Image 1 (cartoon, one colour):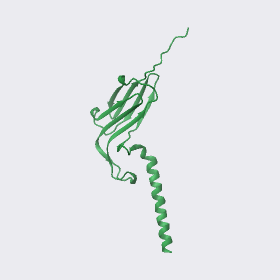
Image 2 (cartoon, helix red, strand yellow; image 1 turned 45 degrees about the vertical axis):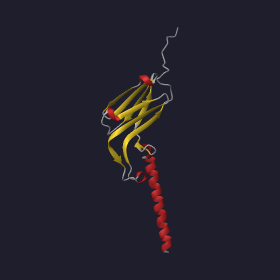
Image 3 (cartoon, helix red, strand yellow; image 1 turned 90 degrees about the vertical axis):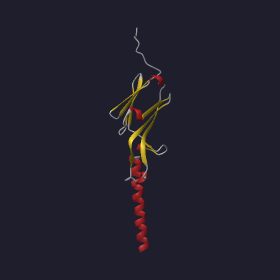
Image 4 (tube, one colour; image 1 turned 135 degrees about the horizontal axis):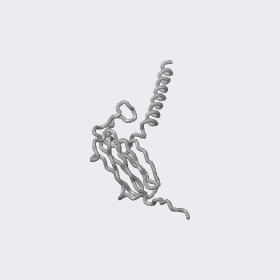
Length: 142
């Protein structure tokens, strides 16, 4: 009788652990880049007729000197150093890993003019403007 009960408790514990790992991975893993050992910041991409505008939330980043933005014809990469490391000690899936930077890779779906791109950092928010190579011009209809 005791063996049956012990096995039953172990099985319940395994199911509970599995459920918590699924919950953690569903809600938190998009925030972590395991390969580069860094956090992935929240961001938003808007596209107008003539440019791409990217807003990146960079809390705990001190100044523009701590941010690096690299733009190619196919992607934008943002890296930023945090003021202090962040640990997720309460979450089983992350262990005791410390994260001290943000890293974000955003694919671009249209050709852009990398040399004319501009970025502004204010109050923890990075705003990047990237002009498109193919611009639309309104023409008059005769």
